[in-house]
Image (cartoon, rainbow, N blue to C red; front, side):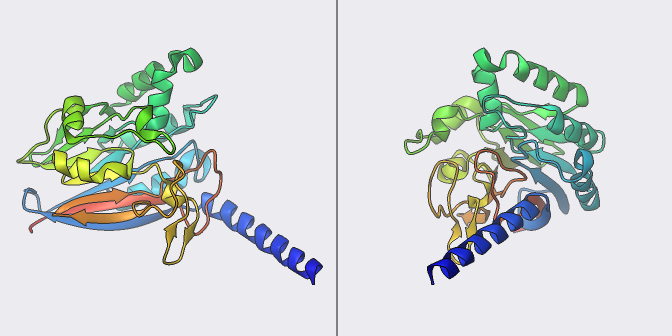
Length: 285
């Protein structure tokens, strides 16, 4: 009896590991639609990339690029953590991807905790962050490190940098709407305000600041997604956290949380396919 149970457990574990390896290399595009009276154009399409962590879908991310091209977006938004910055890092994979995307589309880039770590821990990473930024700028990518840029006459995109205390495990820092304004300035009241904010933990503060749409990642969908329960665990060791993946609405303000495109320390995905987020913004209430 015990041998049978042990064999069954081993077989299930092997199947889960094989499925995880499959999922890590198979990205899906998922679409969301948001309407707003602030929008002037009938329709604007954006794609949102987050948490690549040096993952590749085909050689030089050819599969991912083809998926973006199939959408024909008006703009590409990047939510950070495009590399792995833990002890050592490499920036070639995201640079190759972004170079090709920036040649086709306007690309706006918000930092995640891995970019922030590379910038803050210069005793480990030297000037790699500066070199990364220089290469991005050379491609025409707009880095929104506590900065804003207008797209057309009706959309403003703002990126906010969150320091390491906001990503701490167990004792996360508290972010206020005034602190967001102190970092990135005031939100636009007239334009449709998009906020690139890597952590989804502060949705109340984002919308209180004035974000019509907040785009986040960081939680990798919860790593393992269980039916009816959602994501099992976030990188900050929160279990079944409600804002792990999907679109959420409060008082006409929206948060979309990407499951991300890669993994790093917990190198597992189960029932949690990598995700290319496609958002269609439409004029109207």
